[in-house]
Length: 113
Image 1 (cartoon, one colour):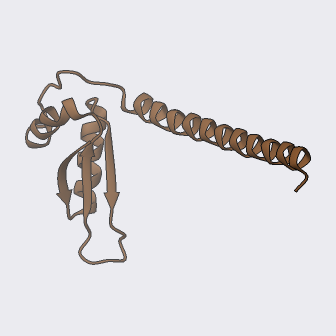
Image 2 (cartoon, rainbow, N blue to C red; image 1 turned 135 degrees about the vertical axis):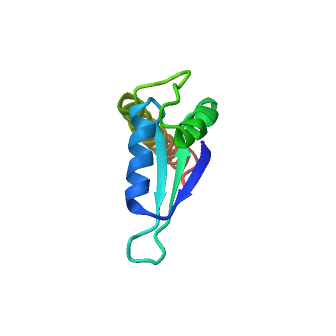
């Protein structure tokens, strides 16, 4: 992920995010709450190879992106990967806990602690 820009205006933030996503460049944003002054958001290009296209697109909204992707599909893929990874981690931890418990019980019965 590469930083594209900081935006200090919420309307400009929405405009840039929509422009990039609609042209096939998925984005990630870090928003500073509206409670703070001044407003500040960072916009990142999720795919490193699209960084240059994203910078050119921000400067010129008519720029043609070389390798566009569907931003919605990209976001879904990222979210499903995260959930699948978390589920695998949970099963692995459960396996370790059960294995350690069974080994402890077996050692207890064998050595009579």
